[in-house]
Length: 117
Image (cartoon, rainbow, N blue to C red):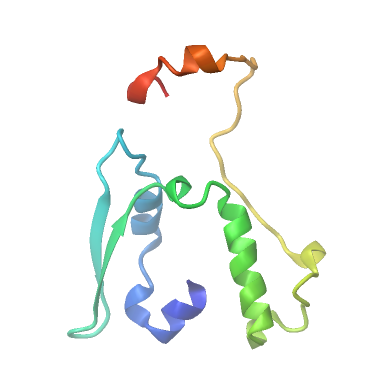
């Protein structure tokens, strides 16, 4: 997305819009819609839902995108090689974890419904 935003500035959406859009969980919140305009007439519309719907591991998607940029010869990543993962720094901001680990059976979880999850 980084390179696409350089090539087409209307894709360079605001961080707050992206954060709101990527965290709207289906069944809990409505999808997020916003427009981004760069210059007159260059408008990009965004319809976003929780990133976990398409990719449950966003860090892996980010690493994949960087690897593609390295393979494409993007000078921003020189002299890193595509498999040089030791030089990648991934910062993942999450919601933490519970203090008490609980286990549930599939039979019990099947009865939760949309709001129980």
